[in-house]
Amino acid sequence: MNRRGLLRAAAGLWAATAGVSVIGGCAPGASRVAALRRIGYLSGNTQQSADKGSGPFRERLRELGHMEDRDISIVFKIADNVNERLAGYAAELVGMPVDVLLAVATSAQLAAKKATSTIPIVLVLSADPVGQGLVANLAHPGGNITGLVTGSLSVTGKQVELLKETVPGLARLAVIGNATNTTMTSLLPAVEDAARVMGVTVQAFPVSSPGELDSALDRIAAQRLDALLVLPALSLVRTDDQIPAFANKAGLPQIYADIEFARAGGLLHYGANFAAQHRRAADYVDKILKGARPADLPIEQPTEFDLIVNPAAAKKLRLTIPDSVMRRATEFVP
Image 1 (tube, helix red, strand yellow):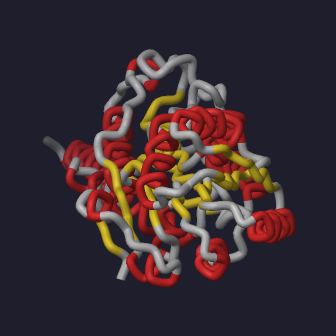
Image 2 (tube, one colour):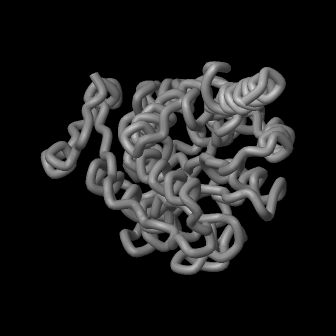
């Protein structure tokens, strides 16, 4: 080969090598960044709740081989109990766009559905996705949405049973729910049905602002009701200990759908295990990232439940929690 041919061959080899290095080798991380799959995490709950929930979710993703900053990135949008932020947050995630959107609790799920009909959405801590118009049915959700439900329609009945077992003289039950959230509309009839069977009357207190919550608590105290059930998605509290502090001072036994209230001083919590729900949500995300269609993935009912008992709250209430309840507890708040 003459000198000109050698130079031409060398130039071609350099160009080929350079092309390979830019795409896959000498620019460290370049190809990995380009290949990152984005997972949106949208929640209307507090930052503390999101931190606790996302831990098991991220851990399970790692077990499935998805490493953050290597092949996935998780973009968090947390409304911190200010639901008005959710529509904008959902639009931001869709606009990026994310490859799959994890929507935590009802308000975030409704915002996600409004924001996109194409990006896959995985529900976690969903109370009643059929009743709230998120999916057609649980076995065949259709569309771009799948995930997990909390089983709240049956769980609320169990919550009433636990209160009746703990407070044998229970006759009048106060129920607080967020009137701005469709969860209350879905769950209140289930509470009333369960209470009716046990001879308990229900007085509902729908609230739509922190001021209305303050007023409702004052009315509950004035009426000397026997116990209190707080439905999920109550994002109107000023702090997690607001209702527990009020109820314990008023001598009012309580049970909560949201775990944070029991850990902040409330008497009882019963519901689907939040960590287990987040871990299963990671399995759904894994399947979708590998090509599964949400429409083909049935929505799952919970298989693990928590019963949290707070002996310190019971002491403040001068209440003896029966052994039948204590034996079933999965956690005791110190």
